[in-house]
Length: 447
Image 1 (tube, rainbow, N blue to C red):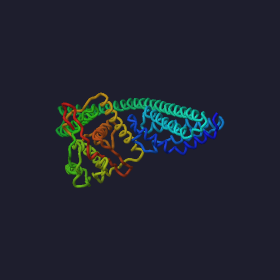
Image 2: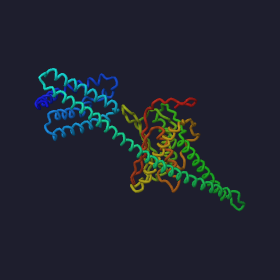
Image 3: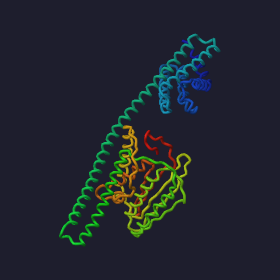
Image 4: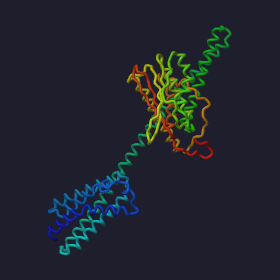
C-alpha cells in the first residue's frame, strides 16, 4: 500500500488543477465533430455536476476507512446521476453524454500521468490506485447516466401512454357530444318541416279566410327562411369539420371592412331601438381571409343585437404591436343581461368543447393526409342558430358557436368571452396580423 500522504497530496493537486481540467475537458468536447449540443449551452450548464463528481473523486483518494470510502462513492454516484438528468433536460441524447464521459476520462488520465512524471519519487502503487479509482469513477458515471436516461425514457413512455388513453377518452366524449348536437339539429329540422307542412295545409284549406291565409303565408315564409338558414349552418359546420374550408390570405384594411359592415347593420340595430357604435383607428392594414373575418364579426354582432333589449352594441378594433408575433384585435361588446357565474359556466363549457373538437378534427385531417379545397360558401349571412349563441334555447345551440370557433381555429385566432350578470357580454377575437406563406397542394388554388 502506498503512503496515505501521497494519495492526499495527489487529491490536493487535482483540487488545485480542477479549473484547468474542466477547461481542457470542454475544449476536447468542442473539438469532437460528433458532439454538437454542448456548443448550445453556457459554461455553467456544461460543467453542471462534474465539479462535485471530481470533488467526490478526490475524497475517495484520501478517504481513510471503509466508511469514508463508501460515503465518497455514494456522493460520486449521486452527482453522476444528477448530471445524467441535467443532460437529458438540456436535450442531449445518450450517446453524446457517454462520449463526454469518455473525454473527461482522458483529461483526468492525462493529468495523472503528468503528475507521475513530475513526481518520480512516488510509491509504485500510488498511480495504479489512482488510475483504478478513475476507471471506477468514469464507469460509474456512465452507468448512472445511462440508468437515469433509461428511467426517464420509461417515465416519458408511461406518460405518453397515459396521454393517449386520456386523448382516446376525450375523443369518445367528443363523438358523443357531436352526435348529440346533430340529434338536436335534426330535431330542429323536423320541427321546421312540421311547421311548414302544417302551414301549407292551411293555405290550401277551403275553409281558411283571407286573413288566415295572409298570416299563415307570412309564417310560412319565416319558417322557410329559418329552415334555409339552419341547413346552411349545418352545411358550413360539416364543411369545417371535414377540413374543407380553404384559407385565402391576402392584405386588406380591417378598419374599412369593420366600418362597412357596421354601417350596413346599423339600420337593423335602429329597428330594435339599439345603438351600434364603432371605435378604432381609421386604417388597419392586416393580412388574412377577409371573408372569414367578416363572417366571424357578423355572427358576433348579430348575436349581440339579438341578446340586447336596451342600449346597444359597441365594436372596437386595434393593433397589438409585438415585434415577435404582431396581432390585431376586434371586440364586440353588448349591454345585454350578461351572465352570473352559475349561468356562465355552461356556455364556457360549450366553448371549451368546441375548441377541443376543432383541434381533434385538425389532428384527424393531418393523419388522413387529406387537404382542403372546397369553394367558399355562397352565402355568408348569419343564421338563426348563430343568433342563439348568447341565450341559447333548448336545442341546437352549439352549431353557431362551433362555426365561429372553427373559423377562429382556421385563422389561428383566439376567441375570448367576458361576461357578468348585469354587465353585458364581450367577445374578443385576436387575429395574427401576418401569415407565413403556405404552399398550395398540386392542382388546388393556394391560400
